[in-house]
Image (cartoon, rainbow, N blue to C red; front, side):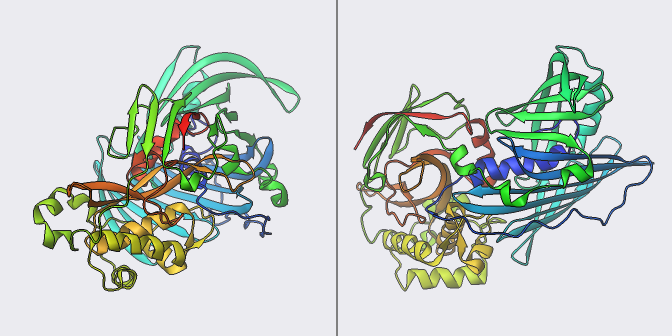
Length: 513
């Protein structure tokens, strides 16, 4: 959620990327009882405020229950700024408490463009750190996951920025109805600059601590999500509300913000709160071979709903026919040896990436173990599905999944199963790619469609021509059932597109069997 003022835009955007896109993914984690968890550690005391600093604290609420806090601090320098931002929250995902810590430290120029940046995300099981150095419109970002460092060179149309909420706060404090502003924020989790726009929609008094405080009410949007901000005339964001997700941020003192009843913080299950409602209950979804449904109430532009061999889409209606099992054993792996021309066409889906480390020695060893001497593409794909499903323990994890870390920890939900499968497949020369969307779940308290991730692998079709085949290593399905509705193809950088449907999408089932 992009903040025009008050607290850090950075930490809010990051948390919504994780919670909105990944943490709502249900996988097959059917925890029946809530596990106790210790409270998150107190706020960092490494950096003390100084005269001239702008510091803001917020309490973070979900459906009226306080789930954490955040702070941001901006220190003016002769040639720019220092920015610190930190957020700690506790959420519950299918009865599993999740403690999430996000931290940003950055050196900015006078225009808030990044000169250096450090980022950390830590949850119950996994962690990610990143450090970046700007070189004009390029950011050299070094990712540290599972003890491995991977360097990326990211190029932007404009120098990536942080901390714009402080400038926007000042501008909104004196704005008039109808005034608009736009800017962008760099998000280390997706390595993208996210466009953000704000529009003043009203001037109204906000009831704040028993007083009527004159405020500017602004509508702020980014990545398809929308929220409302109330900014006082002295430039403080007093309240931020996201209607589609139920999150709220309230300006508080440090003492108030950090006073959190952690035992109650995870009382509302976020996966259930963000579930996609279905017009009817679906029986035996893991056996489904056909689903036709209208996707309603959410913008669908930019999603990967184009027709392929399994899924078709027209006039808002998606039709999915479960694929027949591909011919076995399939072409000989690696594809680069058996069909060099096809491998060249699919080289993107055979290559390693910062989070899909298919060249890692440990990944290669595990891939060979999973294949167990088999070289036929279809047979290997089936073996990988079963190996990942049985090797990775089902557990809800809030993370930016790294294949190497998943292999080390051997636990996670759908996104962890998916990223490991794709890395193992590519290590063997089998083209594979992550897919995300929704899947119907009936073995939960509230049956419906939940956000989910799975895999597509390039396998021979019945006519000997290759095709993308959906497999689900979380459910151990080869091929995946027809309730898997694909919305987006690609890694986390592409997943942010799902933000536009979260909290809004509804499924009207027309045919099912």
